[in-house]
Image: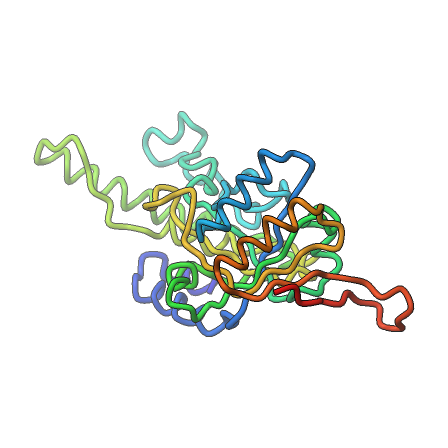
Length: 276
């Protein structure tokens, strides 16, 4: 996809084809691990969001990896030849990540100790299974993409050059007819920022991550609709938070499990025990 976009940066059909292929890689069930802490007011917000059948969409700059959205770059000095860009050292976009909000899932399932440790506050939180074929989750699924893990960054300078050329052409047309505004029918930069934000360094591959990514100004932001299929309670979750989660599962009439550990078992894994 990276090479195809480089060669055909303004071809809408190419973008549609790439999107269609990504649909083939979305699992039927995806899992999201949630953080709960000693801050009860923050916990209530997270639990109420679950109760309201929604998921919070985060700004990319708030992600735990400071090098997220750094898989691609462009060389500003090669754009300095275009009009007023010289004054700005060829920089036309500094923060691609501001174009969209995301939320992260995994295909690792509910019995993944690193995920519980890293994303559920060392087993104090909970994990939710989401059915991607549930009608209520169709919007969620339509914005879902698989993350790919790479060991090299991508130079998108040529794509940025093409975008700037289109801007200047439309600007010249507008000036000839006395228009002070121009309409740019080129979504390449948006597509690039979205698709390339799905690339992470290969050291993160253990997460088997999937991302729901939507434009920052989408209707309903910063939340997206999502109804859970099952809930799993972390082994170190507090009693009060357990009660809230059980109440939510009861409201939705869905199974809820407690993640336990057998001290006398040869199996080095958690056991999910059904509560409801």
